[in-house]
Image 1 (cartoon, rainbow, N blue to C red):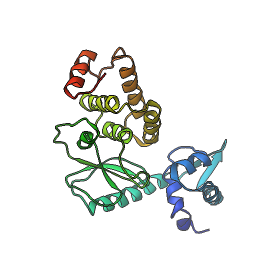
Image 2: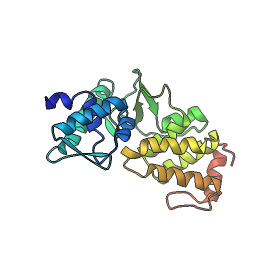
Image 3: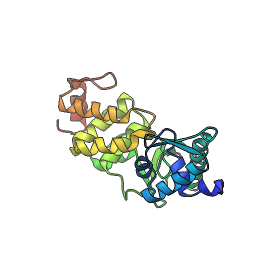
Image 4: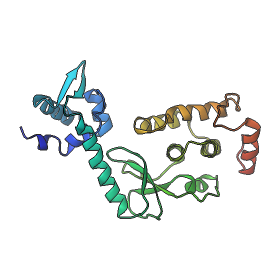
Length: 235
């Protein structure tokens, strides 16, 4: 059986997520590959000894664990080439095999590249004076960036107290659905370098308790009330 053929195409997308033991269902959900194709690819990879299976979870065998890094490296280079055709000074902040968030020094108008981050807050009633770099999200999953996506992107860009305050203002201004916000954070969490879901939970709890559960990166409630008043956000 031809190993290069097995790890090409959908095989590469599956390998991207074999950084740990996963079920076929998990791999299908994460990769977007149909469950039937996932099972077929896994059977073939198991047949040639690339992966093993234990308690319904598939793992890469030694010495094939390097294939995860190869798959991720190939997709990263693909993303860098795509974005590099439209922008300079790229800095990737989050990515999967088919979506990525990045900062750059250029304006982009290409299809499936959506502006995001602090510069977009003004469109949702929270105009920010920021000189941050431009931020874009490449995806075919959505057709625009809604406030729920924007909160997640902003925290992935920077989760310091200033950016968390921006997100608090946006959540309150747009009265964002808390369940939708938590679900979207879970979408980004697996590849996030931060505990995005935990931070979103903290922001929601902060607003719902009027700051009684203030954690270190969040402002005191009286300070936030003053900031909200300046941005004409009703608490």
